Length: 150
Image (cartoon, rainbow, N blue to C red; front, side):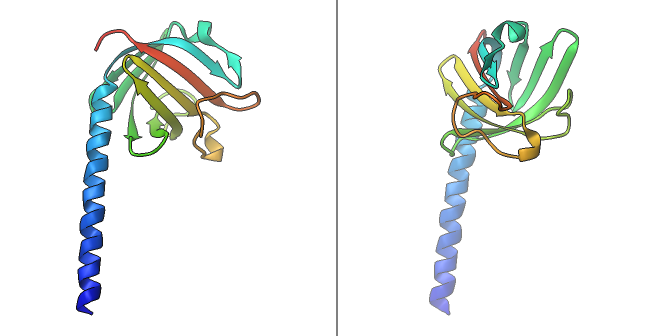
């Protein structure tokens, strides 16, 4: 019985250390994402929509907060990341638009001042994209952003 308790304590300590490491990765990524972002390229369902999104103002602030604005439409909301996953995962929680109050699952990668996010807007499926691609007949939105200022 004592051996079982010791094993359980070791398991909890190892898991706790792993969770702390993941939290640090998440915090580091949240900090690294801060900035004003401009759309470089965008496609949904395999169709290029870059020109339509060039006017998007996308500002990521500390703590997983963002503002996305196109014209008069504005969404001040939040997101979370899981930087320990491969690819890294993001859950976006819009406060406006057709997905208000729902969770949009996404994957992301950050390379210096280039941020690529693949969002799955087929909310009812509840799936997360597996690759950075937007195929025909899907609701996958693939966007590449470049950072303006940090």
